[in-house]
Image (cartoon, rainbow, N blue to C red; front, side, top):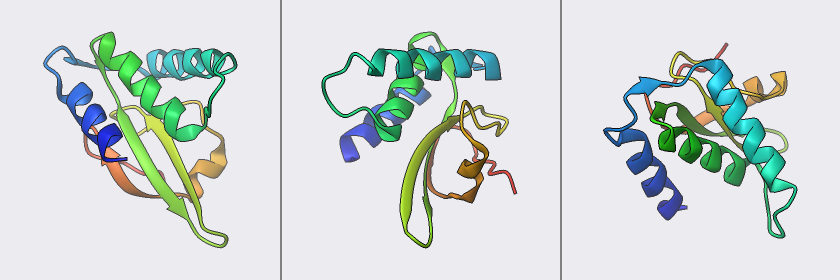
Length: 112
């Protein structure tokens, strides 16, 4: 996990990431990663998808936030991407049940 965090921190603070991703750009990145995941022989879940989407956006010179959160009873973990203004990208409304414990990128704004 530490390697993923280090990579995402580096990618998101790279000088090339000079413009925040719009919601449409971030959604396109998440959907592209999800489509590619269908051809992956290994695990492709929220952690891998969200990290890959953030890296894809960084390669395009765009900034976004990567969030990792937890929900109680039963305990569940989830990772997702959101724009720097706090819009959750390509996620169901149930993502609001997760409390962020780690955010990489600009200040986290969790919807109430």
